[in-house]
Image 1 (cartoon, rainbow, N blue to C red):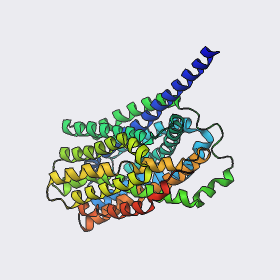
Image 2: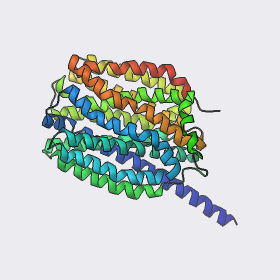
Image 3: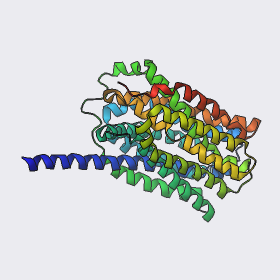
Image 4: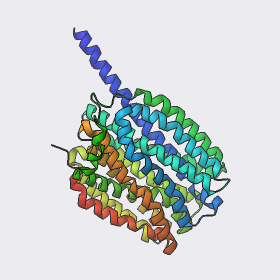
Length: 394
C-alpha cells in the first residue's frame, strides 16, 4: 500500500513538473516570436518609408487583432482548454509573422494583415497560458507566475539578441522571421501537450453568464492596473530602439542593444520577484516597482546622453516587470472563474497596445518620440492608486 501511495505522489509531482516546463516553454517562445518582430521594426519602417505616426498606426494592427480575440478568449479556453487553444494559435502566429516577413517587401497592406493575425493569435495564446500558469501556481502552492513571465522575458531577450545579431550580420528580415517562426511553432506544438487539466470543473458553466464578469468592480480595477503596466511595457518594446536611433543618434545595433537591456531588466526582476511577493505581498511590491519605472522613464526621456538613456532603460524594465503577471494572478484567485476573469483583465490590459502605438507616434511627430514617452508616467501614477485591488481574495 505504501509503495502504491508513493507511486501516485511521484506521478503527481512528475505531472506538475512536466506542466511547469510546458508553461515555461509557451511563455518563452511567445516572447521569442514577439522580439523577433520587434527587433526588426526599424528595418521594416525604413523599407516602407514610415514616419513615427504612420508606424504607430501600422503597429496598431497588432492591438486590433488582440482586442478582437481577447473578449472571446476566456470563453474559448473555458470551453476547449488551454492546451488546445495554444496548439491552434501557434501555427496561426507563425503564419502571421511570416506574412509580415515576406509582405513588407510588397507594401504596408500585407504587414497590416500579418500584424492583425499576430495580435489575434497572441491574444488567445496569452489568456490560455496564463490560465494554465495559474493552475500550476495553485498546485505548487507558491507565487511563481512572475517566473513564467520571466520565461516570456527570457524569450524576448533571446529574440532581441538574435535580432541584433541578424542585423549586424546583414540577414534579411524575411529569412530571419521565417526561421524563427518555424522553430517556435514546432517547439510549442510539442511542449504544450504536457499542459495539465485547467480545472476539475468547467471554468464557466453558462454562456449566458459571460458578460457578468465585465460588471465586477474588482475585475475591472485589476484590468485598469494591468493596462497601466501593459502600456509601460509595450511602449518600451515598440519605441526604445526607434527612439535611441532617431532621438539619441545611435546606430541600429546600439538601438537594438538598448531594447535587449530593457528586456533583460524585466527578466531578472521577474525571476527574483516571487520571493519579494511572498515576503512583502503584492501591493507594496508593485507600488515600489511603479516608482522605479517612473525614475527610469524620466532618465530615458530627459537624459542628455545615450549612457543615461541606457541607465533609464534598466530601471524602466525592472519597474515594468511584475505588474502584468501579478495582475493575472489576482484575476485568477478564484479557480472556478479564472478563465473568464483573466480574459476580461487581459482585454482591458491590451487596450494599452491598441492606444499606445498611435499615441506615442502622434506625440513623436509633435515633439519627439523620447519626449512622447513621458505619457507613460501618467498611467504608472494611476496604477499606484488602484494597486490595493490586488490583495488576494479571502
